[in-house]
Image (tube, rainbow, N blue to C red; front, side):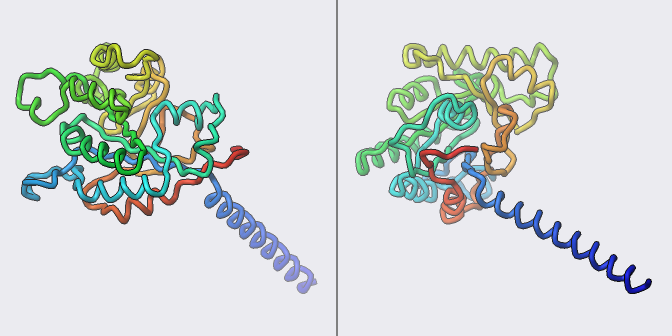
Amino acid sequence: MKSIKFNSKIFVLTSVLSFTLFLSFTWLILEFTTPRIPLLGFHGIIGLENPAPQTELIEMDYPQRELEIFLEYLVTHNYWFLTTQDLYKYFLLKSQDISSEHLNQKPIMISFDDGYKSVYTNLIPFLDRLEEKYGKKVKVVLFINPGTLAKPTSIASTHLKCQNLREGLEKGFYDIQSHGLNHKNLTKITSQELIDELLKAQTQLRKCTEGLDPEQKVGSHLAYPYGAFNKQVESYVSKYYLSSYLYNSRILKYCRLKNYYEIPRLTINRNKPASLLIKMAERSHPIKKKEKC
């Protein structure tokens, strides 16, 4: 009798262990085969010439030379530089088939928050050189606070002006989207202030780019200032924008994403060299013709 009970316990333990191993193995397969896209979030760019002393640089600024190494790697390895609308229609809604030109490419998104002027002065000349050298255009997403565009204060010397946005858009380098009107924490303001932050940002961005954006793609997507959101904020954002982005150091697994208003982005700062960014980019899955989620 004891032997039977002992054997029964062994059988149960063995079954539990086998099932646990099966689940773990299945999870590993799904984890490594689930399609993913790195969405990288930058801020300002530290110039090659006369950079400010290290103590004066904010943590989120990124060295220009490292960025150039990274972008040239992406161009020479034939990455697909996604806009917010590309991500939305091809990977989230799946409302359009991906064209043959993108087959076997790895998609990636390069975004810059807050509208620092260095994204114009330090980046546009290099994007021009890349296009001239390789015949390929790099697109970057700018999440802009249009409340800073016309301020006649010291912020005007550090942040983009409307004309800078228009030039980058005309050249085909910029995808211009909203970061709220004045970079307020959307979870800490009244409902009316929240509406103002969302609607006025959209209106002013479209006014700035008037004549260059016939399909009104500008200001159709949002990145939460500070990455801060809650259900109330999400509810209001969904009334005016097609999607919104977090800043939470996670890679996008688009087949698993259920909420278009919680799109993850990888946080980038000056402590992450180009070599690490390249490793992040290599986690992107190449586009397959009949790939299904």
